[in-house]
Length: 383
Image 1: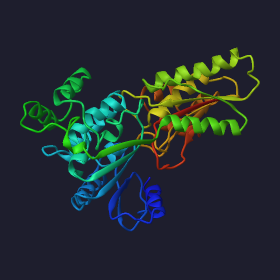
Image 2: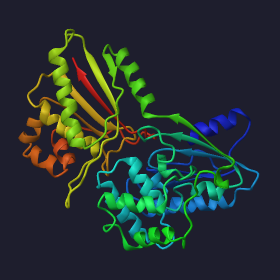
Image 3: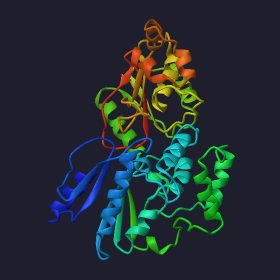
Image 4: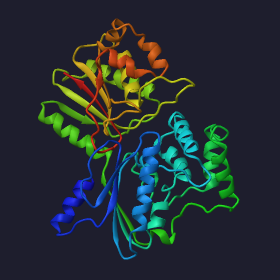
């Protein structure tokens, strides 16, 4: 995104006066005027705090009459996460870890996370005011809710502290979050601490936001590519959501059922889904991510099915959970390949330990970091 922005500026005879670029991997800055910082994802760490501090220093140098471009994508919630005053870095990391294993969807998680992070919930817009701010957004949220993408650093936060507390209570998380986080919410409810910027706040008077990429665009591009390769593509309208293990089984059964009932099953085809599932973790989860768990669950249903049916599930950013894999590709042989490798795939699935199971079968997909994030893509192929 930064490289594209610089190219646009150069075409107009300009260049950036300064700024900061944050990404999940190591890399050079795309321009001498920009500082590159490697943040942490999916849980914040020292890199994320360095990124938040670098962003703060950049904001301090921006004159009131400047024009600022904010290039925002999914992952921002963690990449630039630093705790609000009163919270420790360990408190924030513990909170993120708890939410990631809670089974809450990304919109619900970010409604909570923005409350406790330095730049979320419109706080960046408040710091940039009164500069002219243009926000260009790549969405990783179903429905493209701008207040949820990246925890909405330049978007009004519609939720009050009371609503956040109620949400945590309904999810059974209120007593499990760090005490300092509970204290921050209660103090905000009581008016001792300021609320996040709300709709109508002067901080947003000169802010405009534009959605430039989304999961739907990725699905349409995948469909075009499938057609070029001689596959008849079908893009499913309804986004995938819910528990990854349940969704994986449902999608695999749909693939098998549609193949057996189709009148033109001889024609190679593919079904393309997009969205983002969740995983509700137990006390001692294994290694993996939502796409790997979905794929392993699909592999159980596909076990012994036709060689012509396969399913790919992957995160578009190239990283699924805290692993080096984007996801996996499974077919009717994958489940037995895991067993032959000496593992119990059913136990691995129950213990949220999909990574070593799929790795044992050679099913993991490792494309590396892609530089974008528009949720997940699942592709079922019938040949």
